[in-house]
Amino acid sequence: MKQLQLTPPLLILTMGYPGSGKTYFARQFADEYKLARISEDRIRFELFEKPTFAAEEFEIIQRMGMYMVEQLMQTKQTIVYDGMFLQTHERLQVQQLAKQNGYRVLIVWLQTDIETSAQRANQRDRRNPDSKYSFSLDRQTFDAVRSTLQRPHEKDSVVVISGKHANKSQCLTVLRKITTVYSENLGKGRPATPAHSRASTDRPNVRPGQRFVQ
Image (cartoon, rainbow, N blue to C red; front, side, top):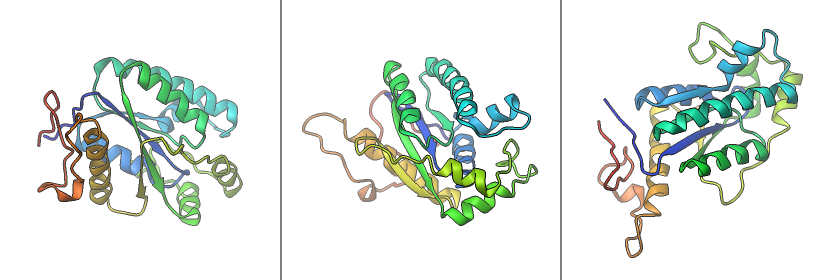
């Protein structure tokens, strides 16, 4: 069994267009490391029979998600929050909550070309575990949602992965970024070691009090 227990604890936010592969990554990463996962798709599925993807709807879903993540933060365990988080104020709200609860935040930005994302979002198959709670979007709705994208701030901790890559490759990229983020604060006089120079590249660097067990 693999575990990803970090000090301070980590909140992983997915970011990206509908159909970019956020749930594919989030579900498998959370399953691999036995992490709690919040799904905006699942919240929408439970609350709205025929969602419109309007701003008011997003606000309700985010309020529910914020409540859930705040409760999970009491565990001090790594959390995966599977949502779009396209707008700055959405990410900032979660980042502020994380700071109040002693969490770091890593934004995992899933990038997939627009045409592929639009096609995936329009052809949801509920038999697919990653589309089980998703609703199909027509092109007009997809374009309206993606037009709200605001790039992360330069000070945000962000890792970009392709929504077309295999999950193993995606996870390795994210783990390397986690290694870098936690290495930056190892202490004065102890420079961070680049992930690519370590003997093992599939696990983050850990300090006393942290565990990464396979």
